[in-house]
Image (cartoon, rainbow, N blue to C red; front, side, top):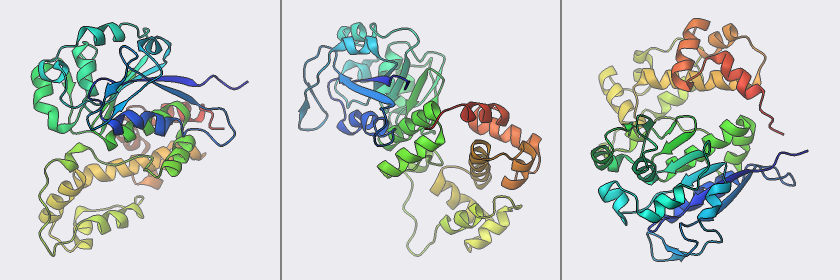
Length: 326
C-alpha cells in the first residue's frame, strides 16, 4: 500500500512575497512520477482563513484557516516584506501566536527568507543555528540575539527546524527536503522537471554586494570545470591559477568573489558531493571512494564528509540506501 502523502501547510501572512509563497507547492508537488500517488500534499492557509495582501499589487484567497496547521507534518513560513511588528520589533501579533499554537509537537518547521523572523519571534530558534536573507542580518541579530545566526549559508538544516536565505535559497531548501525525505533519485527528477539544480554550491556570501569584474578580465569558471573532471587527482592551487592565467593571489581573490569560498573549501565540497553520489549509487568501499574522489584515505574522507554533510560516510550510505525512490 502506498504511504499517505506528507502534509505540508504554508502559512501566508500579510505582506507575503508571492514567489516564496508558491515555492513549496511548486517544488514538493513535483516530487512524484506521472501516474504515481503524490509524495506531498501542500495546502495554503492564513491566520483567519481570510484573503491577504501580498507584497505586490494583488491579494490571494485561500481555502484554509489556521486549523490546517494542526494537521500538518511540515509547516512552512514564507517571507513577508516589511509589513508587521514581527520584523520591526521582533514580536508576534496575537493572531499569529494563536495560529502557531495549533501546530502539533514534533511538526517540522521551515522558513524561507524573512520567515525566520516569525520562528525567532515565537522563541523557536533560541539557541539554535539558523539563517535568513543576508540583507536582514543586522536587524535579526539585534532582535534575536539568542539565535545562532549564520547569514553566509543558503540554508540550515537543524533537524526539525530548517531555515533558508531569500528567493532561490528557498528553492534550494525545498530541494533539500525532497532529497532528505525521498533520496537523490527523486530530488534529481524534481530538479529536471523544474529546471533547477538539485544542489547548489557555495552560500549567500557569493551574492553579497560584490564588485563587478573589471572589463577584460576573465573568471575562474574554466578552472573549476577543469578541476571537476580531475577530482581524483592532486590539484594544487598553483595549477588552478595557471589554468585561469592568473597569479595565485589574484586567482584566490577572484575565486572567493565568484563562489563565496576559498579554492580549498570548494574542492572539499566538490569531492564530498562526488563521494555522496558514489555512497548512494555504487557498491564501492569507503576506501575506494576516498581514492576515487581525491581524499586519498578513508580517514580523510570521513573527516571531510562529516564536516560537509554532518554525518559519517557509512551513516549517510545507510540512510539513503534505506530510502525508497520508486
